[in-house]
Length: 356
Image 1 (cartoon, one colour):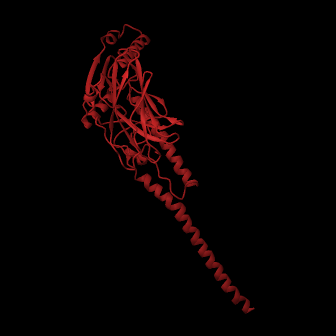
Image 2 (cartoon, rainbow, N blue to C red):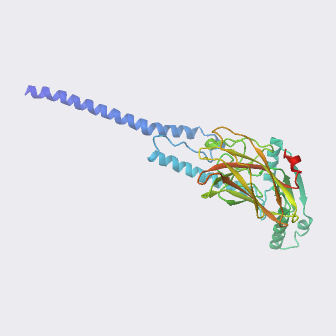
């Protein structure tokens, strides 16, 4: 009997040791694979600056691509993107004048502050419409709105892509004349899918970026006119991003016009090949010079492009289209400093003498 008891003791001891080892191993795994990632997420959330809270994105842990922690991070990132979009829409609405949907005085002041900070060459024009002022209390509200919208369309038709039209009162307007794509006040360090005032998206989701845009390995630099620029993705025939400037009025049929601009290219984590811009003025289409895809972290600068078009109508549209040099491969290109006018009259274009 004593021999059986003596034999049972080592077995019990081994069982207890194995249980202890298993408990420690399970605790270590839970701590390492669950608690540590959750603690890191909590610390990152606690450390977010207030100004970066909206739209903040969590990095997906390497070992949690398809588990519940990965689902938690993806859901958080998606909700943050939706929240940021809602916030930007609200902010955009607060910066627009009712009925005309033009930038209001608050947005105009922000744009002017950007211009001053970047030391851009810019002209500001104030336009007062006495007709609108005199009709106050005379026309019905619906009639006055029709008159306002008609006037806005007339003003837009005579403005070039270098100009931004704003409404600062019921009958006062302001025009900022520059060579860039200024006017966007949202986040330029993410896919904002927004074109500047005066432009309309015609394909895909082009973005407004600036020289500080660096998310997902983007590398950009300032153009000669500075400020914001238009970013487009070309991945033909699957995806094309483009923007349109409508109603360019006052053209003379048969007369030649210069369209000049600066272009650049970047390489982010999705870019695959080089590309260029297609410029469509009326029914005529011309291609800019080809740009090779640079190395990661390398920005090869902006290059001026000059094209000569012949007007075939008194009113024509101007469209810019991002284009890849290889089918089914993506390119990321930028465009800025747009000019439309008589050949050789663009003061920013270093090739203006050769154009003449």
